[in-house]
Figure 1 (cartoon, rainbow, N blue to C red):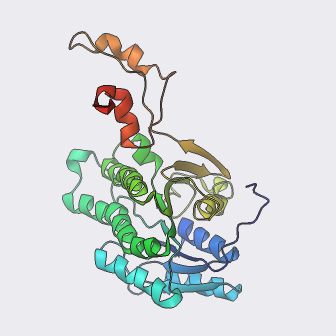
Figure 2: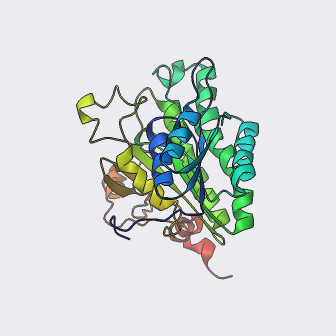
Length: 298
């Protein structure tokens, strides 16, 4: 499908977490502009106007269909209530975009990270997505259809100093995404991951203001839109997107080496040679190349 073809979400219901601002807001506006009914989730902060209601009102003012949801996604109960909001209003959830996340309040080496900070990071970035998927999947399985997008990051995929717990919370989502894809493969349910590059309130210190237009969240919304569409038949993929561009990120395996002793120093050139890489899609793909004896007929 080319960028000139318009994806039609008419009759579809899309739930976007963390959609009150930034990237999530861009996703919500994109889905509404393409005909979806949108559930705009964003936690309500005391003394601050509802960001979820503001985005939902903006969508309705432009002729779209949207309702706000203000449940926190850092608990199982909050996610269950969020999905119930969608089902009560629209009787279905066709797509779930797990966008809500937080950055560390401080950047510290792993041995100095306060445990309450580590738990907070995992509660929102990992468990928030885990519980959201658990809450939405039953309705998708009953319908025989669903699309899910989780949000990883370059820090999680490649590592970044003084962001180890944030990186762990984001990389854990890749394992979750791949596992859920294996479990739901027989149904028309597809789950993928996006690693977004965009200037938002969370990233404005890292991305200069003069790059705001280039790095606008609106320039990646179409990628998530496609991943949540009927046109997307691929599951288990990781797409990096930003500045109107995208590329696929892969977890690959190099050539197999059988060491003759316990000193691997001299083997690094061979281990680092990735000319013959393979990309396992499932655990058995990796097993049958690493230990083919295990897969041989008995």
